Image (cartoon, rainbow, N blue to C red; front, side):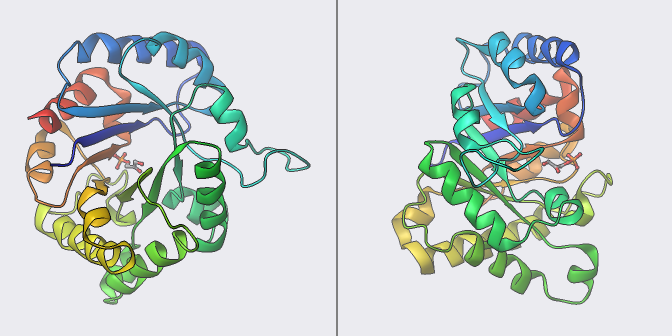
Length: 251
Ligand code: 13P
């Protein structure tokens, strides 16, 4: 039985002080009620340390939103996996559609980042998902399949990887994929993983859904056989809503 995993991706929101407040609110709202579920928060780079201090000693994990594929050097504006590890991060989100859409990331650079994060001992949340135009032109399966194949090229052990399926058209739009639509793609991802890594690894892999997850739709999504939790954007900025989503995954 896979343990569900819910992570709040705070994106480019909250100052350091605001992040500390939200982290304390999340801690208070969750209480001891999430034993069935792994939980993480992903503040901006700038607020990682401060938020990390707030959740220190709790079971909430500190997650970063991206990392570079070199350890250090002349890469203005970037942060390396080694630095994230030293800052107390357990995990890093890689290949988010906003990184692909606005910052030119490709499957190849995503793959380099995944490899570097793993080699630095971080867990990875690898994001995949199709745009609305891709869904409407019937290439969802092909797009997701190449994101999974190319994102994982050269990686032989996926035990520290979680895949997040986030259809781009459902992110921040209030338009959630129906649980059946999401399940179909989650099943496809697990099938690809079975082909690449075998049954045992595929059965163990957690696949999160992301895209307008809210307290009102979380339970239905998390009840699907191949949906193992959520990557939460907007609703993770409200501690009460985030806690309600975690609770839905903890049953
Ligand atoms: P929303 O929950 O705001 O749709 O964002 C999802 C997401 O992109 C999480 O990474």
